[in-house]
Image (cartoon, rainbow, N blue to C red):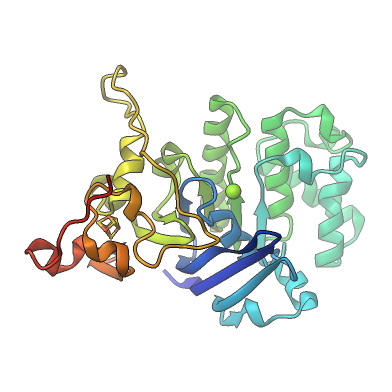
Length: 336
Ligand code: SF4
Ligand code: MG
């Protein structure tokens, strides 16, 4: 599959009253045509910031891309002007967020809201935009589209509103859809329906999806590949079957252990990972997970683990992958 998006060594910081927060610290990822890449991790790990940076929604002076490249179809998005970027947003890469209500205008009918971006980006007539809007509502599974287009956001349920956001995101036929926690605000049955909808849309349109979530169940049901992020970095990346079947990074293992599995004793307690992520005002020089890691070695505290390829498509940033960790060359480190 062709690569359509390539993010290399991205660093993003925010200036606050408390100092500089290093929210994204050297993230690399790639996205291929027609696939779903999930980015997972606890809140504050930099997954949303990574997505917003791809869309160039991080604005100076508060937020700043310090270094790195974001290549979309041979164009470096970090080098585009705001005007050039406006042509990419929506028409090439579209994004949807957790709460559809914050993105929909409550005073405008949804028909008008869907048509507006098409008229603006695609320079089509309002009659054609209306026809396309009907098709889009059908595509996202909304019945009676003609009548529904005349209604206002409050006349739809939360799940329906998220379907409308998806329709709006697809309006200009983008190649990439970035969905940031798209199902988090919805109840479980509706979540499953929206995930099914993503799958259907991908089959029908071939769109590539970046799905940001902290829900590993969602990841397992839809993603082809997964990037596990922690403290602004990618800790492990691989195919979904490798990450779930053979997780290598202690943090990934911790995340998976904290999720109850369908086929096991429901009485098994969830295992939260003790401790909390490091302070990104002053990130540690070694592995960011060292203070929470039960396998930590001396080296982990002093030096950042390199991203090691464990096998094709599967990469892990952990010193345990280093041959020296298997002998006695790396003394252990006690966190307690
Ligand atoms: Fe744990 Fe060290 Fe691996 Fe970090 S590098 S996850 S501290 S073993
Ligand atoms: Mg977020």
